[in-house]
Image: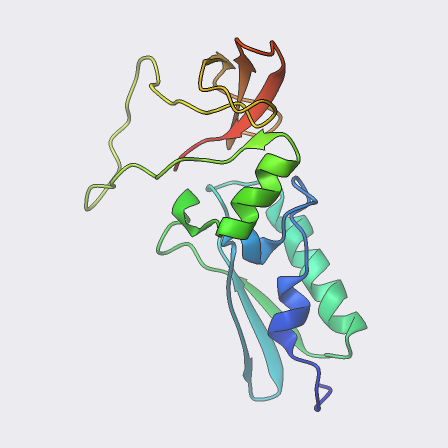
Length: 167
């Protein structure tokens, strides 16, 4: 491992999400911890949802970035508890999402203790248009390009946009 001025957290915090490349893993709250244990840089990440297909790419991108920065021994670990929530997205991350035309999530619903009950039926999510700011939007599909986003359309400017769903 390189010693000196390079901070492994700063390196890891600059790694972007493979599905949202304008937002870093730190912005999304996916980057949970970066520390050194017995000469090894240990990075902990939490998926936005179980089975997220981008986890392998996130892990590889973190390894490459830290190796390029001179850290030879790196261990990227997946941490599932507590489960990720959209409330972990930073204000900067929310700003970056909106700037790229993706509506950031609102506040996450309060989670009950224990297993999360399955809710069937229509959703009641709302999102303002990231392009014109109108609150008059409609959900076109509960799933967008990724399972964590919904596809919506603005009734004012008629433009479609994605919305990161509150989790």
